[in-house]
Amino acid sequence: MKRLGRFVGWLALGLAGIFLAVQLSYGVRVWWWRDHNPQATAFMQASLERLRAKKPDAKLKHVWVPYERISTSLKRAVVAAEDARFADHEGFDWEAIEKALEKNRKKGKVVAGASTISQQLAKNLFLSADRTPWRKGQEALITVMIEQLMDKRRILEIYLNVIEWGDGVFGAEAAARHYYGTGAQSLGPDAAARLAAIVPNPRFYDRNRNTTWLTRKTQMILARMPSAEVP
Image (cartoon, rainbow, N blue to C red):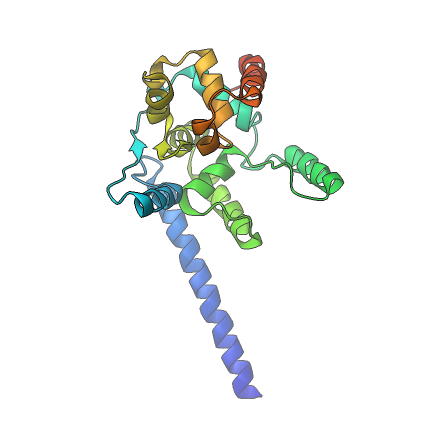
C-alpha cells in the first residue's frame, strides 16, 4: 500500500508539473505577442489542414494590418456584435454569462453563449472549437493571461487580424478584400456591420451572403454601433 501511495503521489506530482509547463508555454506566447504579431493560430492551422485534405496546394487568405489601418466602423461593429462590454470587463462578462445560462436552462440545451472577445481570442490562438469542459477551462485560464498581459487595444488588434471570416479567409484585411474588393481601412458602416454579422458562422455566410437573417443582423449591429466603445 505504501508503494502504491508513493506511486500515486509521484504521478500526481508529474501531472501537476505537466499542467504547469503547458500553462507556462501559453503564458510565454501571450507575453511575446504583446508586441509581436502571431504568424498563425490553432484555428488557421486546422482550417489549412482541412482545405489541403481536398486540395494539397491550398493556402489561407490572410494579411496582417496594424490597428490604425482597420476602419473604426469595423472595430465598432465587431464590439457591438460580439462583446458590448469589451472595454469594461476583465475578460468575462458575468451578466451575459448569467443570461445565457438561464436561456439555455429554459430551452433545455445550449442555444446561447456569452464568450467575450478575449475568450474568443484565447480559443482561436491556442485551442479548438470543441465544447468540452477541459477546453472551456483552458480557455478561461488563457483569457486571464491575455487580459493581464495585454491592453484592450492590442487584444482587439490581434482578434481582428486572426478571426475566421470565410472559408480559408482570416483577418479583417483578407475579409474586406474577399467580400468587398477593398482594404480594411476603407470599410464603411454598412460593410463593417455585415462583416461583423458574418463572424459567428463565417463559412456558412461565405456561401450564403444574402440571407434574410444576415440582413436583419446587419441592421441590428448598425443600430448598436454608435454606442460601441473601442480602445
